[in-house]
Image 1 (tube, rainbow, N blue to C red):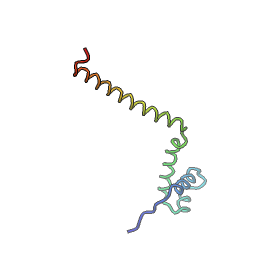
Image 2 (cartoon, rainbow, N blue to C red):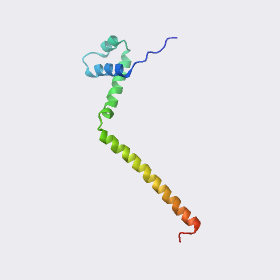
Image 3 (tube, helix red, strand yellow):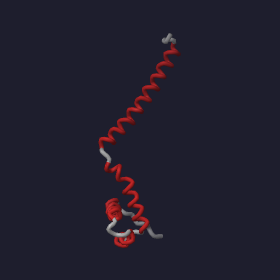
Image 4 (tube, rainbow, N blue to C red):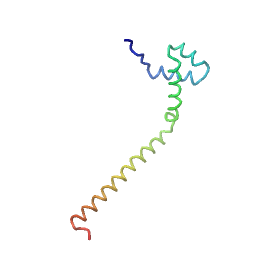
Length: 95
């Protein structure tokens, strides 16, 4: 049984960039690199889909992460506040 070929990220990126550039056809690129044309097309689509994330401002990523952390903390505060109120009622401290 033949093993599948595994391609590294640099190779995939180089092939995808050639496909995105459009100087050669997909068939020419696939023949040049020994890869099936559908694979070239797949790598091109993946590269184009992930490009906005790669080029996104790192500040934007930090803000999103901060917002997620903040939301989780507010949830936890709300949950703990409810628990405290419930314990106060059970103990008779709250009148």
